[in-house]
Every structure is written in structure tokens, then in C-alpha cells.
Length: 490
Image (cartoon, rainbow, N blue to C red; front, side):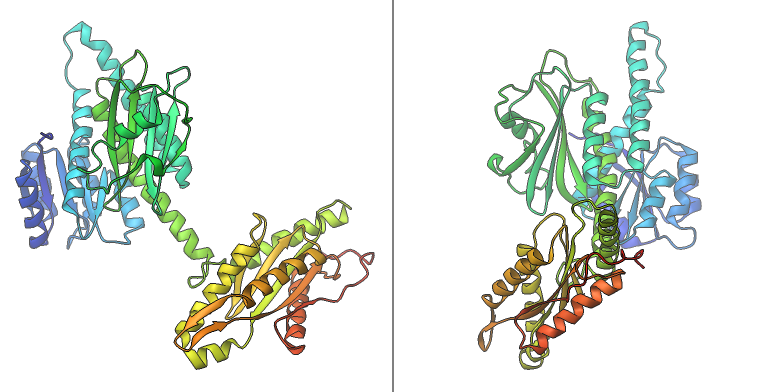
């Protein structure tokens, strides 16, 4: 049976408070509800509680303002804040004020139960460090506990500054290895339907097999509410396929982000040493910290994607194209002036032929399908890691091709053109074919002195292709490459 705790619910939404109270009471927790900040402070001063579930949108004094006052009554109190979807900065503020975690509305009761269990683990651990120790034999255990507390604080400080998901995983695995005194740690994550397990191993520790790690990591997956996982579907990192050892001990805890089960973290003993006796308390504490930072990393990635991509096609947007072309032009110009290889920079611009007719005849929905198909073709053909593909505006697209001569850029443009004309869009009127016109300009061959000139020359070549009958590639006129070097880009 899970640990039982005393929970104070603070909120002025009667229906929400009653639902949460009934659910936590049915899970054998002791629950009390208050509806205002003054009542909450008085209640906490007069009775012992483990956890405060706090509505961050209470009328009057906001829940966020109340977090710090609650922690001032007892810094060990675990505060779970209820936030609206899209809380963003408010959620970060709640954590900085001292909240241990937060939940998004509508609250999933299973996620609430998980947060409460984690909060009780954390509360129990920090309480144990304050218990008087009269037995000399227990003092080393207390010293070890204080060392763990310091590592947890260091872990918190490290995580706060990390926004990259992969760096979060590295930090979590490294910290869990030390805090739980493990031989191995593993991080299971499901993103975009891809299941991955990243493993970290203490130096000179025996390796458990992938099968053994997978079995431990997923042994409670169904009870946590997850769908069935299969060993053959996992992408592994940090653990070779030929590892054959076993896990003597394990402590595994779920990772829940935005109220959805997305993974798990595990600590394993594979050699002679045992895990820290408090591993089953420590791993949930690490998991709870990881959940918040992983969510922040996901939100950061999502925000970054929204800010840099075109929402319809998923290609880079015009602003990012502009930043990229300026950067690459500066690089090419520098190489050209220093007479070093790699200074060629090509721009391919294309415009879908008769696009207005698609929209007027078949509707904007089909027009959107055309634009998405063009984007897919571009990504499949211009697939070098250095290429940038962007939606320039409307039905116009652009490819930045660094270290690419005019001749090679024309080859790429022809491949795109041919692939497009061979592609089919299904419509109510039957299969339709799409073509596009292309203009190619290449620095330094075209003699452009600024970024604007390079883009303009590609655009002029594009409209020359339109005038000459469409569905063709035209090149910008070449100029004497030995002429005065181009000036600094604007």
C-alpha cells in the first residue's frame, strides 16, 4: 500500500475541491479543504500537514502569492499547484516560489495520485534528516543523508538552467547514478511514438542485458496507465547489444509530463554493491524534478518550433530564411576574399505554376495540400544537413545551398522540378499534377554585392522561367568573378 499523508486542499472552486477531496480520501489520505489564503495559513499553523494542493487561480490573493507563505510556515511542506493549460511563466514562478510540482487542468486524478505519492517520498526523506540520532551507529547514515540532500540541491540548481532535452536526460542519469549509489541508471522516454532507453553506467560496473533493463523498466508500465511496450521497438543508447548481465536490485519510477505518462527512470545494482537503502524514496524525488524540467524543455522546443517554422508546411519561415542567408553569405564572402574553397553559395527559388487556379477551381483545402506536397518534395530532394528549405511566401519557396556551385544547384533544381511534375494530388475531379518554375543564383559567380542582390537575382531568374513557359529552371546571369570583391552584406 502506498504511503498515506495529510493533505490540505486550498481553493475557492467548490466542485473542484470536492472532487479532489473525495478522490484522495478514497486513496486513504487524510484531507481537509479551505477556501481562502487566511484559512490556509491558520490551518497549517494549527495542524500538521504533509502536502498542500493549491489552486493557483484563487480569487483575491492568488495561489502563486500563497506558495511562499506556505513554505514559510514549514519549508518541508510539499506544494502541488493547479494551473491552467498554457500557464507557462506562471508555472515556472510557482516552482521558483517553492512549489514541488504542478498539475494542468483538467486534472487527471491518476496524475494527482502520482504527484501526491512523490511529494510524500520527498517529505519523508527530508523529515528523516531532522530526526535526533542517539545511536552512534546511525550517525554515518545521517551523514550520508545530508550528502544526498546536498546532491539533490545541486541537481536542482543544475537542472534549472537546462532547456535542451538531451542535456536534461544526461543530468538526470548522472545524478541518479550518484544519489542512489547505482551501478547503472536508465531513462525510458516515448516521443513522437518512438520508444528510447538511454543508459549510464558507473565505471567498471557489470553491464546488465538490454532484456533485463527493459523488463525492470516496464514491469509496472501497465499499472501506471501506459500502453504495452515491446523490446524490439526500443532504440538504445549507452548499452551494447552483447551485454549479458542481470540486475540484482532496481528502483524504477514513472515520468509524467503534462499529465501524460511519457517514460520512466530506473536505478540498478548489477554488481556486489547494493543500492542506497533509500533508493525507493530518492528515485521518485529525482523523477519529480526531471518531470518539471523535461516539460520546460518540451515547451522550449515547441516554442522554438512555432517561432521558426511555417505552420502549414512545417518548413522554415521567412524570418529564419533571412537569418540563414545573411549568415551563409557572410561565410561565403569571407572564404572568397581569402581565396579558400567552399565559398560558393547558391539560392534556388521556386513558385508553383498556376496556383491561383488550384485555389479558385478546387478550393483552398486542395491548395493547402499542394503546398504541403511541394514542401515534402523539397525536403526529400534538398536533404543535405547544410541545406535550408523555407517557405518564402504564398506559393513561393526557397532553398539555401551552401558550398554549391551554379551547375550543382541547377541539378538539384531539376530534380525537384522532375519530382514535382511526376507527383499526383488526388482531388474530387481526379488526379492532378503540379509543376513549378525555378530561378537559380550563385555567389560569387553572379557578382552579387549584398544578400538582397543575390535574392533578387534568383527571383529575376524565376520570373524569366515563368515568361518562357513555366515548369523550367533558369539561371541568373553570370558576371566576371575577378571583379571587385562584394561588399559587406546588409
